[in-house]
Image (cartoon, rainbow, N blue to C red; front, side, top):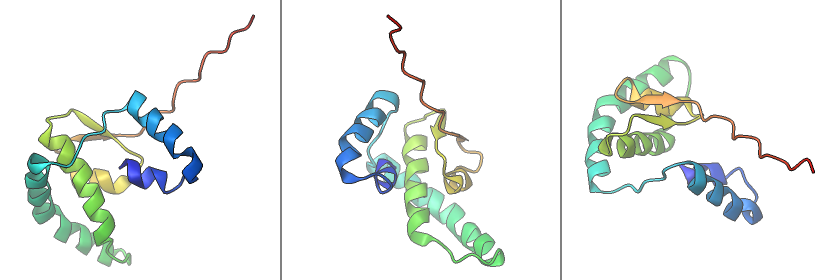
Amino acid sequence: MVGESLLRVPPEEHEEVVATFARNFRVLPFDLAAAREFARLWIKREPRLREEDLRGGIAPKKGIYRFDCQIVAIAISRNLDCIYSHDGDVGRFAAGEIEVREIPEPPQEQVDLL
């Protein structure tokens, strides 16, 4: 989610970061189709993820899981091919239903030499 990314950026830089997202990615809304997909995914995945985390000695992250599940639900509801994310939990929710790729480094801007 763009909102999660902005938490790590000083507020005076938010406009620039949002513009970068707008230029390089499709940022889609959470609508009724995504809500239906969210419920399906949540019912299917959340109990297993919670058990895995508890077995691993990690406190379940229910609030964070919801964000990750929403991202996956939006992409699946739009029949997209993949999601770009640095967040491993997004991949846990996707679990083979949609590919999750690492966000590529932005291209270096060309500089005039003359």
